Amino acid sequence: MSVSYRQPGVVLTDRRFTVPLDHDDPAGETIELYAREVVASDKAHQDDLPWLVHLAGGPGLGAMRPVGRQAWLDRALREYRVLLLDQRGTGASTPATRQTLPLRGGPAAQAEYLTHFRADSIVRDCEAIRREVTGGAPWTVHGQSFGGFCAVTYLSLAPEGLRTVLVTGGLPSLDAHADDVYRAAYPRVERKVAAHYARYPQDVARARRIADHLLTHDVTLPGGYRLTVEAFQSLGILLGTGDGSHRLHHLLADAFVRTPHGFELSDAFQEEARNLLSYAGRPLYALVHEAIYGQGERPTAWSAERVRAEFPQFDAARSLAGDAPLLFTGESVHPWMFDCDPALRPLRETAELLAARTGWRPLYDPARLAANEVPVAAAVYHDDMYVDTAHSLRTARAIRGLRTWVTDEFEHDGVRVEGPRVLDRLLALARDEI
Figure: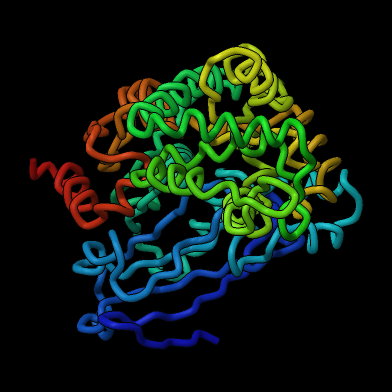
């Protein structure tokens, strides 16, 4: 039963849907999806509003939990009824976590189950939901980051369900292997770290001091997370957001406190680091992060870890042995995370099986994209740390009629920072108004 309630300026309705786990076996096992319908208060009884479905980033992240007309929602609600979908396995949709996955059986059964949690399954979920929600009318898709990857898969598999597509920071390469993705990523990350140290030169010494401490001490954070130097370096994921450099600076500034036993990492630092590093709230992100690039017979095989060895400047021990600044890393998943994080430890073998898997289905149809007739507009953030700009622009050229807005005004989270303006610009581009 749907339940509606109010927040300032909006009416929200909880929606639940049942879909097949495997859309190729519609009579087989099912899972539940959760979505939150949002409509402006003054349009709540307007039945002819077009629909916009939002596909969040990740993979493995649930949709935003809004309070009123936050961020891009304010612009969308002027003309749309919005559906915030928790993609399968995330949020309030049938969860995939260390607690729930053992219900599937052992690691092999868990890994097989998780092969159904990629963009192609998410698109087919959307199509099943669309027919129920809109009565069969096409809808607009807004894809942020990984949600944009899903939107391109949507254009490949079911363009008849789409009225318009809006992508923010999420045009994927159509044919790059995960190795290609990370070979492009590490130099971008290095540039972001250099920019951070140029802004906050005092952080060079602070980061080296923390890393040196971690190389000589065993540190376990509250909740059981093992803070190794590699884990500390991965805090560089912050540098891909608009305020991330400032947040990292403040974290480093408060790292140490004097105790009767000498200087130690402060409780405040440890607690914030745990909140940033733990995958307890998003384990699916770690499990399928490289699988989203899988196509064909070539395994991903812990791509980010293997490719990192090609960039020895990221080796902390090497940096500390000389006078080079410590380099942080970015949005990547590594096997050691399944040792450090108690939310991931029971899933290590499952992750290994996914990394070794071959026979991934294609996610994109270049011929269909080349003949695309759906209006598409995409914001491409210049030197985006999470999604390679060159890959995005090459894909933009491969999708007929797609219009881009390339900007260095924002980082990857531009739609969160200036959502109404970003969405307004993309809608104008899609409608040929500019």
